[in-house]
Image (spheres, rainbow, N blue to C red):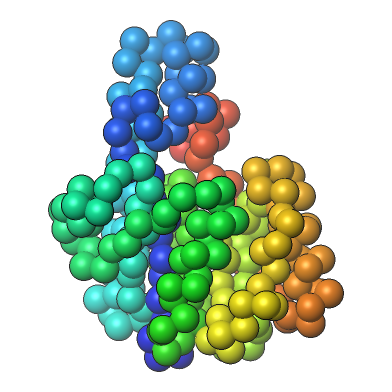
Length: 216
């Protein structure tokens, strides 16, 4: 196992009205849920808890180091939240779109001695095998991506070598939030000579249609 592998978990502060807004909208419109925003925030907390449970077990086994990257609140609240979740390393995501925030987290991770993985918290099916597979792939590849059903990706991992070459990162001009995020990333990686491997396809949980099979 490569030394110093890091896992950055990008998490939204789970306050009603400040997270899972599309899910809250669906709960309100389709199910006439009386406290849709609060219910969506509760789901966000559950998802974050599940993600960190998986991650912390691997940290306890010495497989990786966990970093919680928080958006939607200030540094003091972020530290307190991370402490309540049992995570010792925390930082803010900062401003900008997803691509900007992702790049910022990768830049901050260049001080690690091994590869870095970045995931969100919308993954109710996440398990330790997913993360171990990504770390193993990064021993043989520059870049690892976890394809999502909506055309994006649920995980991105950079090898130690690629982490130190930001000019090669395939993150520029990506249509974030669209159905061609993965395809565009793969095309850029190929153009830049970045070797890539893919994990299994998964879906994240963002709106009502995603929630139903999880609760079923």
